[in-house]
Image 1 (cartoon, rainbow, N blue to C red):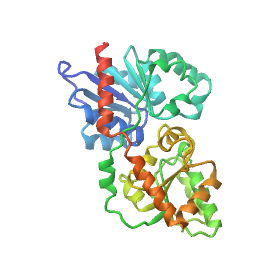
Image 2 (cartoon, rainbow, N blue to C red):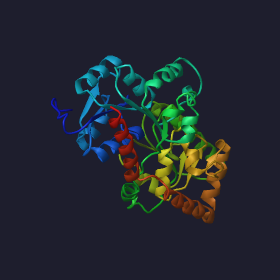
Image 3 (cartoon, rainbow, N blue to C red):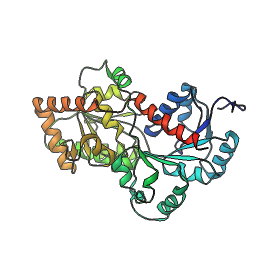
Image 4 (tube, one colour):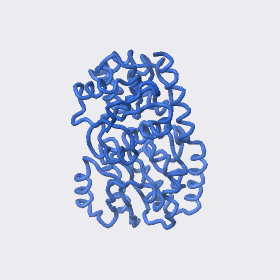
Length: 356
């Protein structure tokens, strides 16, 4: 909750607006920004009521949670706090914020969904309203270029990447030495992450005669469908469903490989996190993941058959596996730290404040 009276003289006020009710990648980025700059600005986190409440209360971050994310509720919340800047995360939050009044809006696009790659009513609305956006922050060059309106709004775009707290990730996974799982999936059980593809890969691996033990960390609307698929294919002994985990890093460290089967990704944070822990990653060729590994990287898979071929190589060839581990750790050296990320945001906010 937020205090009814906040001192406007001391600090400028910034509202972080998200449609979601959970704690995941975009939400983690928003909290990283808030915690990193809370001595300089007054922040309020606005989102939909849900599990995110527990995290906000734990971090002692001022918030307003809406019963339903719509224009009326958001407008009431914004009227109440009168922010100097709205930092809107992703498309729905950006459009809704722009419809709520004459606020200065920074749009932070964390991913590039398929619908945003072609002209339709939604993309036309975003392109038209987007002319009022002060700045568009993109997590990767490729993800932004995939957007159908990228050329129209290119003068507003700034590539900012994603912050990755290496020390925290290493500390959360440091006690795990033994490899308990061959292959791991980490992500929401949602269309974007395509957990069904992971299950199909495991099914086809078992057909090769290779005994594999796998696990899936996450929850979401496709969870029941995935449970049914596992049962239908008699994979109960091969795939362990671990549900949502506050600390997924312990399971990454317990695993030999991480598979990213996403249909689209803005950045692919989970792939970067696994690399920090020295866990080789196999991924679909999508969005920012391509920028993490490089356009022609062997880690990128063309299809399920390619996944299976490379998984078998890594599980059967210890020397090859060690090469992939070393490459993962080398790659992790170049990731953006929270400190570097906060420095970028400080400049962005200062520029906007000076324009008021």
